[in-house]
Image 1 (cartoon, rainbow, N blue to C red):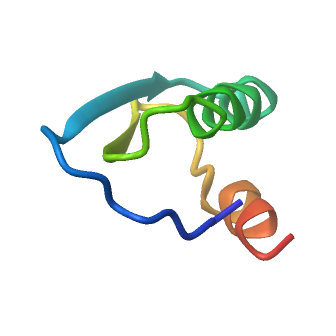
Image 2 (cartoon, rainbow, N blue to C red):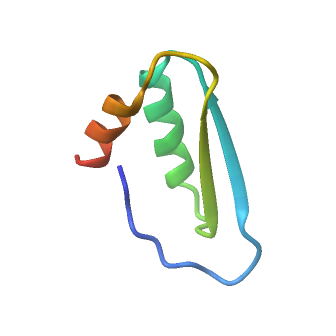
Length: 63
């Protein structure tokens, strides 16, 4: 899911995404964020005490 975007001039917008045992929704949320027209983004995913989602995120990152 990692994509390279050219940074644009202007402020950095931080998007904080809390998640708790819902990897399928996390994938949809991240895809939605990445489809936005504003590109100067910092995306922060917070695991709110759920199971470790690293394997799921890694599988999407390598896709």
